[in-house]
Length: 395
Length: 86
Image (cartoon, rainbow over all chains, first blue to last red; front, side, top):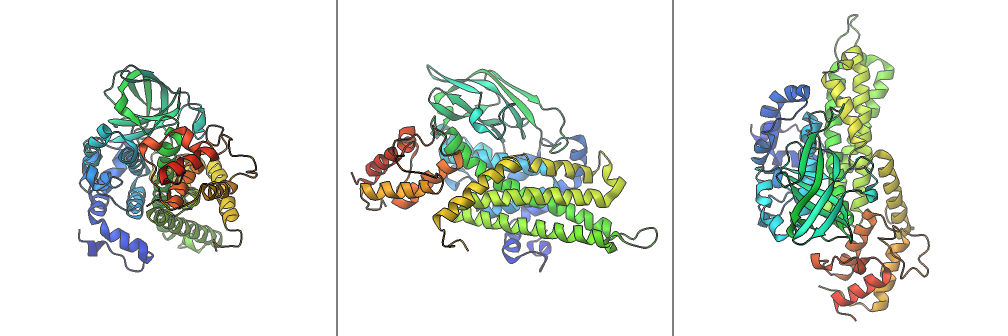
């Protein structure tokens, strides 16, 4: 498909439109190969093993890695739009970009020479990466990590259980967070390391095809080159930065999800009913349609703004990302619930797309920081920003 | 390029930053900011970014010692060392 054929003049704000035209290959993949298979993999509850190879051909798996390590070095905005695009298709698939992106970025920035030298495998999609932070009792409260890494004669020994790892069933490389005697730290654990056990999570209502797994580490021995960053900085420099990026990808993915809900809502609402009357003509429904439009388009603009703040290394980029995540995950919840409402009994089909999207939207309000945590963090930023410029320099 | 600053300028800049997030920075110079839980992980990252941008220094892998960032005095000593103002 040519780039020109994918253009829809006037349908997108100019900055967004510009981004879309750059990734004709990804678009062709999403609209061709993936579109033909997505219903099947969502029903079956697993994104197929070969998606990595397909995605790698578009460069998206190396997007957050500098060229010197084999990456394609995309801007945050461009990668964000890729997340949005895949999010319109499947939130499960989009979550691969979230976790693979977070981990490859962290390894390029903080990995040992050995970890960096292996980045080419990840950027080429021969290996996939997953992010292993959450534990049964510490989800968003990352300070209460119970996984433990003990220093040994030639490296580290890791013990602990990580939960709800997106693409954990497929990943070759895990970025694992654990406490050490010198503070919190991040490590690379490979699927084939001794003491590693990977167990699929029980079926979930949302992200049902995201190959969620439990990672059990039982005195898993790794070399000292597997440490990422330094002890005491695992949760801040490595994890904190990764989570900021992850939240941005969740924001863009949520916008994509919300957009697909809107499409479904409009298609249903514009269908002629038995008595000739269309749902779109009921005034209360018109309220839902307009509120959803405002929420989704507003969230998209916030996500684009946050991405360009990161691209410009702006001082308040973190705050912008939190705002985008909050707005977009809620826009997805609203759009999915309106879509379910408009579809009536049809929307209740357990195996149907309307119901799947409802579950996916719930996940967006939980993943990479739940709504209440994000509100808490954003309020801190908003107040700090006001303290930094109380005269209204933010306006 | 490191920016030419005096030790006192570094101290007040770091305090100015912390005032955004901490209500009272009086007498805080030796208080543990990160390991004491006074700054959450996002703010700790922002502080490191602030130091890099404000003083034109780059925090390298080997600079990631908790003592360099866990207190105002630690940060001041670190910036002095990196920017050669001591």
